[in-house]
Length: 598
Image (cartoon, rainbow, N blue to C red; front, side):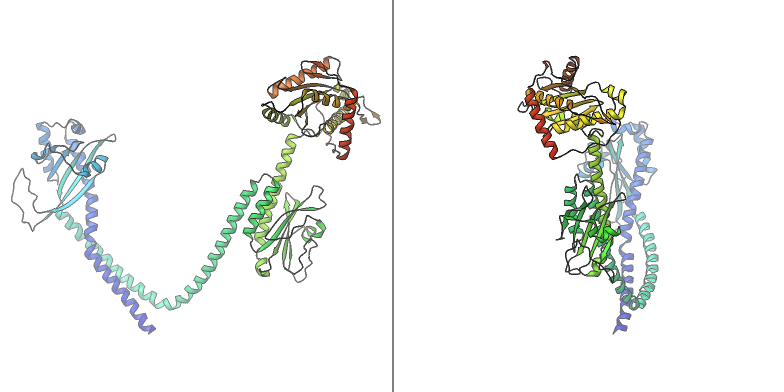
């Protein structure tokens, strides 16, 4: 039975090939020749149109004037004798015939839609039809028998100038013999190719049939391998896509909280058969804080670095991959499920830990194959954490004065602008205190720049201690300081300024084996909107009050436009004592000593 099938299949296929070849020889020459004739006639018609325009003295202008003299008509009559065209017409843009080899047609107007839909839009139109009589009505001759039909080609060629339709020319040509010649040549070519195709197809079919039995088994094996490969490629493509999306989202995160929320979402989709968690080193670096988890991963509030073998050994730890393993102390699940501990490294520093544990339904072998993917995820997460921390650090450095630990001028100006915008409705008070260290140059000249730095740090520490809540102290530069006091009217701002002056006056700065001379400051107070409507105006008013205080002898507070402020000493001492008590509860670390600009 199988041998009969092996014999019949090639026989049926060869019969089909021969039948298709015979059908092609009989059917295809006509449509092919008609297509070739259409292209050839369209090309010739464009050449005839150009030739027709050249033989006229006025050229293409005749389609604009539509007037022909006797000489031009004679030239057009000779055109038919010098070409294969037996009839032609010339049209105006509206379809009116202003010249025809059949004079009785002159002045008539075509109503064919193709003239306006196709030809008037600059496209050539071709049409062929069989007719029984092609006599020239101006030169009558014997009529042909009805059985002796002729194939006539009608070609419309638009006449265009600079994109404007000026008219058209319609040519008539007898293509009966030309089509017969085309069909004969095409049929001969198809016959040759069909014969070669039959021979080659027969040989190929026989060869394929003889080897089909051997190849069938190989094709089945190949299909199975390709299916497995496609599944693997689809899995890898999905992982690559998710990793790319994870990286894109992580790089756009603005905070660690937002970043860890993204990590939980992506990891639950990227590794659905695994439970995991992430820990990040605290600022003290003695413990790691729990950051996020997914798929039910256990998450502790804190773990110690020594509780993880991955952190202690400085590389990924795979529990369950060796004959002898020791469980990490931070892993509380004791059912011998395999897990990974990935130290999260960034810029050569360990910033955290990612743990990944197999779910109960997942096998150990399948889980271990996820190590490479999980490692890539840990690398993406580590870079994102480092970038967020670096961005926060750079942001902090860009707004903090390194010597005093106060905000710098840039941050102060931006904050002042925001507070003024929020106080425009008049519902909130806003005041400024401009501060300058008296005789600061003497500290640098008499004791050195290190002593000057200590003075500036002492002033900055005092400002931070007394400016609590929303108050914003800053160092503008050199020995100049300023404090922004939101929700503070002029009286309370003046009282705060006196608190600052008295507190700094009482500060003793030890330099070497002795104390530096007493530090005093001069202060100027201004409030919004009485002393300015813009940040520049308000700061200038506070500075003018400061200059007034210096002119009056320094170590005093002046109000913009009012002169020296008078605050009872008892109120000032009480306020300083309260601020000192609050600062002792949360001490402020001294900033790193750097050179001052005084």
